[in-house]
Image 1 (cartoon, rainbow, N blue to C red):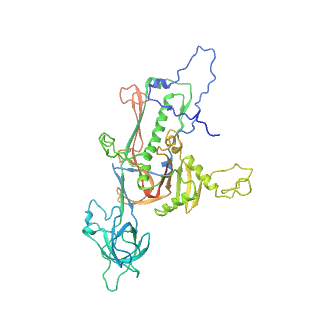
Image 2 (tube, one colour):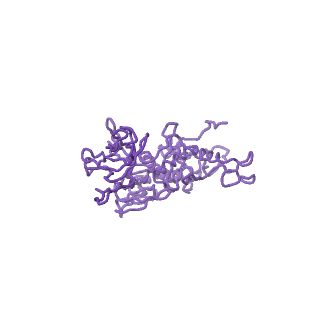
Image 3 (tube, one colour):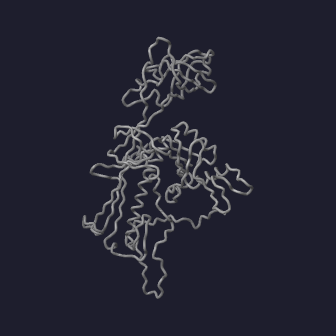
Length: 478
């Protein structure tokens, strides 16, 4: 029968912004003749409640000393245009084409658009393909000035142009041909680099407890995920604040978006002076690949992913960080590829599943063109985070991350450097390290900085995540 909705999982926060004294256990009725049989230690009913670990598994951290982080990623090596038309009719021996691809003839902050030419030169040979036919041709002229989005070709085939006028065709360069005794290639091509940038954001948190409450001991032994134990209740709250801040350091890098100007009116985050940052999800949605149908649950779906990866960086190994439903779907898909051996038996995978062993119904990875590994991502399952979003509420089912590193031009170092596809840059210099700062103020708990009868523990970090080669990532959304 289906899982019942009641009783469900508790979403009531354990941390509340109320007077500190109420966080202590005060039910000490010594006039009762019967003493309760109590357990001293808190029971960890939710296990490990932290959700961070993703960036530690796939990325790295390195310092930065600027408000702006920029890097250059290689463009394509070969040239192809997809939105090209001509007024020449079928059978014509020559034709003049107009290129209407986005960014063509191109714009540059340093060079006027009229001075930017197509990446096609006289003497090059091109393949022109439409839906009704294709041709091979040689480029005989390239426009300039007002016609810098045009080029003229002469067809090799005796029958001339194989497609109709005004049909949208694609063009790519496959070589060149020159007659004897002629000058060399006219002009040269500059390397096409894509410049990306992001900005670090400042994250803060604080825990405060009065000196009087620090002197009060409880009868429940408290513990937290990082191993802190004791009978002082404020220690639990302080350590949980630290763990919560650690989680936010990661989730902010995943979810951050840049502040944009409001479409209408004023008073949004950008107007108030906040700049935001480019988180992983934002970068992949803008510059990467998006699966918008939930998640692939068949080999046909993964074949579509593989075809897209073939058109990107063709990274050999990829890891899919996914939620539970996506994990089940992959397990079922892979299990369905097996004939199940003898009737009534289960034999798929690299094991026999005999009667003397535990039945393993899960898979950790598979190979189909590329190597795909899967691992559960707690962040996508946690009901207090992404795992609790309603259907239609920007549900993310998984993220495909390429393994390894990429070579980029680091503008701070001034040279090419190998970087993980995902890595965090934190602000630091010789005198200030803002990777993870924590300090104590007040007049309690060993601090003697002011006359406040309390201990305040402050946390601060300034960081940004760099998603390099986002075209090799896949995000799976409903």
